[in-house]
Image (cartoon, rainbow, N blue to C red; front, side, top):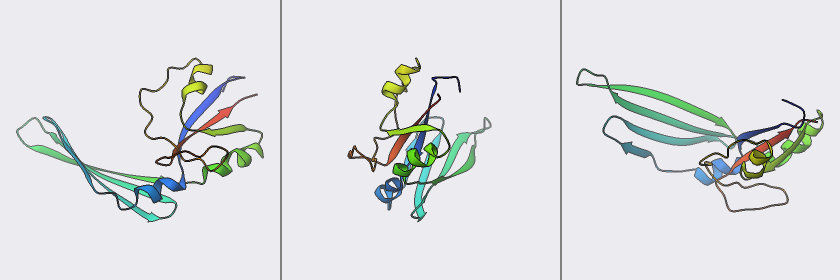
Length: 136
């Protein structure tokens, strides 16, 4: 990272799994694809999405695919202090906004969710946060 640069990373807080526990499967069908996603939280620090996709194979049939996304959830309020021990200045926020502007980056068109941050700011959320790392 360049001096004065900012790296923004999406991180899922422990709240993400708690809030989404028991979520019903998601399904969407379009003309040329379909997806069915099932959710599970096998442990307090894990959130899993199992997605089955269907796309035309070009010969009149459909090809089936599968993806499994296993997310590790963390207590994001602990990250700034942990990283400070290694000489990294970090802060936890709810969107890319100001940091993206500071680094002259385009803001994302959509941030997946708002955030619950267990520090000074408490907001209603889905548990996804943004971790900002700044170089000296």
